[in-house]
Image (tube, rainbow, N blue to C red):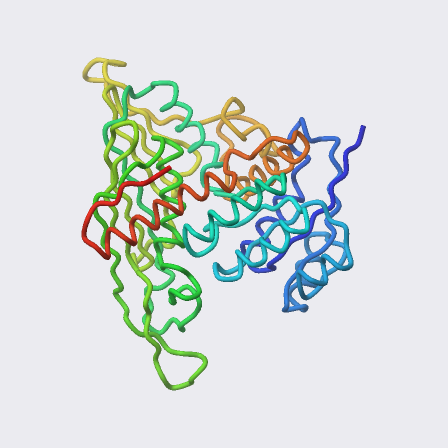
Length: 381
């Protein structure tokens, strides 16, 4: 029997278009092959952009506001891909209207906004998830499964680094990402939340931020609202965070948007009592596994593991489903929209529901507080 869901997209920028790409391919999953997604509406105040995205991805129409969407359409579920300061009020309106929602990270600008959204979603009884697309890359998901299965023993040390260079040019204009009022924090929220989620995905809950440094390398940028002037940047270009995990491991998270020559790379390493696992987005079709005693010299050492159809998500997102065919970042968005649709149809939470995203926001808030007070912050989960 065919099941039907009507989908809307709020935010027609690059992140929103990634969600649209995901929805176009949801039926690649065998268990979702009889689901009919009606791509109903693209919502964006830039109607020319909204119309372009609607035409490219097969949405039926476009409107300029969420209010118009709710007044004129009976969609079941909505993806929200907006700047941080617009996310919470938009999600609040959609949750109050009883819609299932899939949000981009971070969940609001701070832990308070995230918790309010989590409580509202629970009260409304809807599916409310955050994409956290990186954890749906098959190789990283397979690495997390290997850690959970004990492949490296007890985790002792975990590190995550998220590097990018999009803000390296000091003439990059001042925008919402550079202002606390609109972003909450800089690299910590923009990229650090992905890295913190990846660490919790592999190692488990963060219990303490032991120390934190949030540093701004470029203190002023050209202000588009006042041509010829420069405005102050009050968010971090680089975040350095020391962590403790509930399971006993320690770790670090480093995120920076001024790493010259690295356009984008999320890398994760976990060292345990019996080996280690490493993953890098720059080589996203495999992970590296070292197991103590698995081989003897001279052939001992790390092995490159190339996931295949047995890896999480792989069989649901690959058009030619054979080991060795490389996955790309687009497949992660297919997997996250599949997980969202699956959760709606089964009435079960996503693994990255609002409560999970709130834990990440609590860790980010602890990093802000530890940096301000220069004292450790214990997380209350």
